[in-house]
Amino acid sequence: MSDCLFCKIVAGDIPATTVHETGTTLAFRDINPQAKVHVLVVPKAHHEDAAALGVADPQLLADVVATAAKVARLEGMDEAGYRLVFNTGEHAGRTVFHAHLHVLGGEQLGLFGRPAG
Image (cartoon, rainbow, N blue to C red; front, side, top):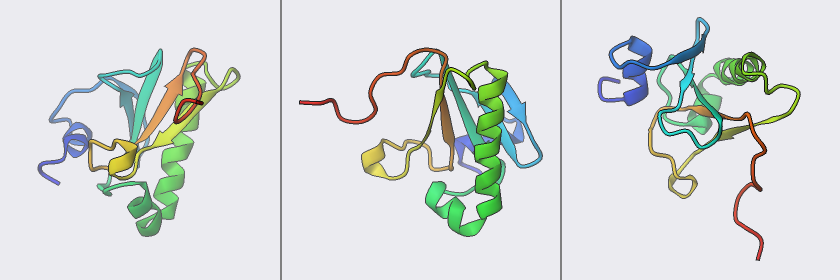
C-alpha cells in the first residue's frame, strides 16, 4: 500500500535499523522502544492486522512468529525470556495498520495488562 508506513520501510523508502530479514519478513528496531530491546517483525506483504494475516496466510503468520523467535536468539533473550505482542484494534492501541509483532525484552518486564487493584 502506497501510504502504509511499514510497506514503505519494507520497500526501503523509509530507513530502519534492520535486525533480521527473511524472504517473507523484516525485523527492525522500534523508534519508540518500550523495553531495553524492542523490535518489530512485519510480514513483507501488507495485511491490516494479525487477525487478517492469520485468515489470509497462516504460513506467513507462522513466519512472523519464527522470525520473532530468531530475533530473541540474536538479541540474547531466548533463555531469560521475552514478550511477543500483536496489537489488534482500537482498544489494544494499534497505531499502524500493517500487521506487526512486537518483540520486547532485554530486562525484567512488568506485569502485563491492567494493574492490580
